[in-house]
Image (cartoon, rainbow, N blue to C red):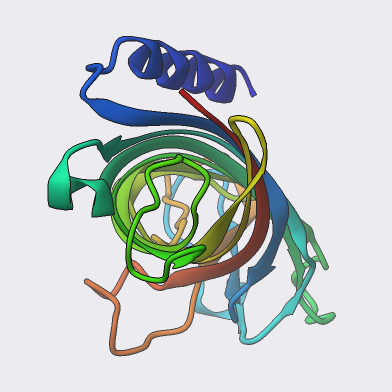
Length: 240
């Protein structure tokens, strides 16, 4: 959580120092994360630091998973001239967590695996006004608009009974932004987040440890980046 607080302060500082020739929006986002299918591999590392014996490696597919929370802070800079009004750059620190639990499979213990992730995503966005003038900005700053975007950034993953690691994550997002009063806006948003597996190694502490991985599909950039999440979010924004 200290990492998340530092990232939030960085986002706010960048927002305050952005050039005036842009529409700056600072926001807070929260909601639920729906995990994609995950696999767990239970491995018992020996006391001498070697590799687990074959009969001490137990894999489980499509384990039970729980919904988890997601919170984020966003600073978004929309262009403020001509066609640039339709495009933006966004910086966003994000935190989310979830739990996974495998079926009983002796001799492995039945761990409840807690997963936490902190990320900083850099995204490019595009938007289209939908009200009051579809496809055109009214000039009042109170247009409702739909948007979509894609981004990437570093992700730190931490798994109880497992390991922690840094890797590259990716996201796709889409939503609608609706003015409420004055400069206050509300967002409804859905996302797709892709992160890397978290694997233990022999130098981790001995005993039973857990590797986590996702489900391979055609969009994974490599064999280790297949852990998926599907957040459903609500955001509150302040327009400068």
